[in-house]
Length: 203
Image 1 (cartoon, rainbow, N blue to C red):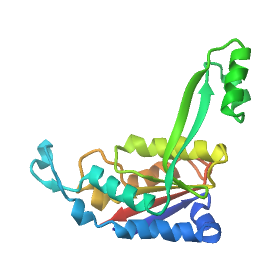
Image 2 (cartoon, rainbow, N blue to C red; image 1 turned 90 degrees about the horizontal axis):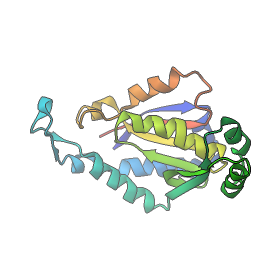
Image 3 (spheres, helix red, strand yellow; image 1 turned 45 degrees about the vertical axis):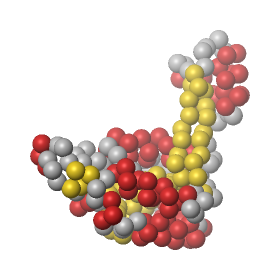
Image 4 (cartoon, rainbow, N blue to C red; image 1 turned 135 degrees about the vertical axis):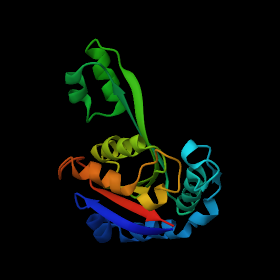
């Protein structure tokens, strides 16, 4: 596959080029190592394209996972405790998970355990490969990457998504670069408050 377009949010790409150029090269190598045509294996059951041979999101995801893991990119989790009190959440936001729990209990509230998980992290760079529904990309950009950045686990988040030309050859409802670029740009220059690189790919 190849990179068809990139968007640098809050100088995310510039950060990679200056501080993590080796990782940026790895990401490019991972993308070019995946032969999309190998994964045109899904026979559509949708009414509008019944019987058409489509690119399989599951198979392409698996290919990216193998390629990233072979280069020592691995899963990472951030655990935390939440409660119904907005004031308590603000107070405990930057505490360790154990401190959060103790503070919430001490205030007489009930703590609930939660976590954010990112599939691929290496040397403070997070990568998400997203061939799922459009809502998943929004969660990646506005929750996952942001949580890891605020938690001082990463310096930049990278989101790899199909271009519209590739999405047209996939099941309906899959997010695509042009649409997600619009969603980020319309939020304003500072939102989400995490350096990001959007990468649009095609066969």
